[in-house]
Length: 134
Image 1 (cartoon, one colour):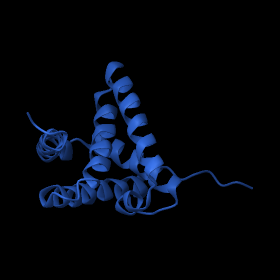
Image 2 (spheres, rainbow, N blue to C red; image 1 turned 90 degrees about the vertical axis):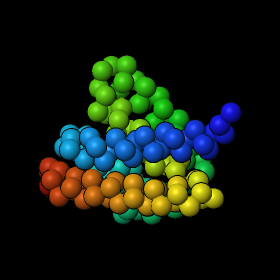
Image 3 (cartoon, one colour; image 1 turned 60 degrees about the vertical axis):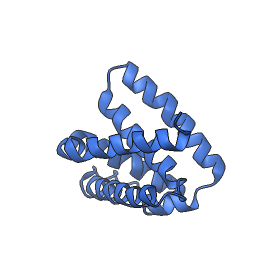
């Protein structure tokens, strides 16, 4: 019987393969990943996804995973697979960060962080500017 770490690793590899084969070619999915990650990063007061993961409190981690699970399931049930996919990618990234004992997971997490940073950058460059307040 596989451990929960082994099961997660298999899921992580599946998501990474899907990102490589399909996700990178889906501008809407990448935009959704970037917009959600950017919102989380900016609300936390950090600038980068990796920095956010390194500095978040355990309570934040637990709450985000709970929120991701319920919102991802809701989006999927409502037929919005791309939003559910974006949520899944960010959730996988959060969990992968905790797998520091596995060098392959550490390497994979770094690659995923780079991809998420890229999507944040694209989102920031292209989001609509906020209206000026007087």
